[in-house]
Image (cartoon, rainbow, N blue to C red; front, top):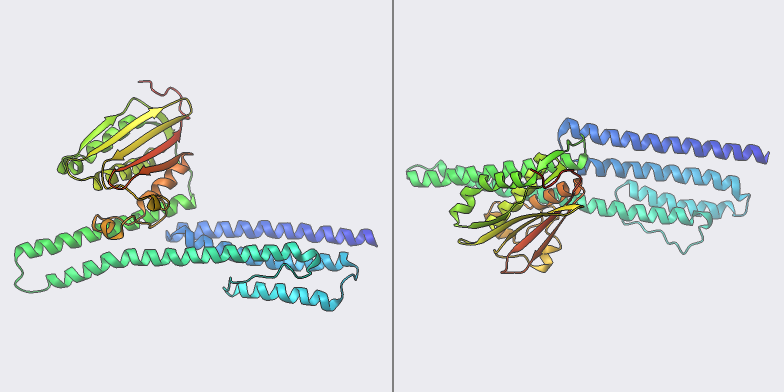
Length: 362
């Protein structure tokens, strides 16, 4: 009889593990399918799917543990005591399922073998609460970033309807509308690119890349920007090869060099330097511009974070560039750091693993 009982327990555990595998697989497939079909940021889809899976799995865990407890307990706890335990846990799960993540079950109560389960419920509620706050912040930031240029476009389009405008006024208003439209386009492009990278929908192609040639090309491409401000680039680019995704690395260097130009005053200096050793390649991009405070350096790679919101907006920023840079660098197994002081410029250091053979060879 006792042997038959344990066979039943083993069968239930196996079915539970199969259910977990199916739930995780279905959630992952749904997330990727929705992203592929809609192009929407994967973060929102993944939060919804993962939250739903967590609730389903935890509810299943409760039922499983309840069954096992009844099999193993052997009457040590009364039905009323057992019922009270499950009332508390089920009430917490019900609140979580309804979107109330401010749930905290007291671990001081005598839950017996359910103590670990109660701890898991508390942990899940805390994590879901954090994800919900991230989701709300994400939606708020996206809405704000889109609303600002749309307001400008709408306002200046209304001004263009006025009669007796001079050609100079028409050109000025049209230029602002064009600039704000480009900012909207860039924001959408960065959001979709960042979402695609996070979704990891397709494997990246890694090929040998000549970093020195790549950086030279970008400096030439941005020459109108640095020449207009009479900035003199200080360049040190020995021949260096590594294996990476050329298009994504382009985004890294364009963003960092463009930022260096953007925040450097006229007659300033920017420095682009490559070095390498046996294990890694280091690219340093520095300027003698306005600099970044110590506090801002802690958050500068966060999505939508802006060092100076009014200044950054006037220069066309949307707070996504550096988070995109960090994501690409990390996908290559590298890291990015910043060193800066207010009024003394900023220095961004990108370190990438040197997996390519034959580096420093022509």
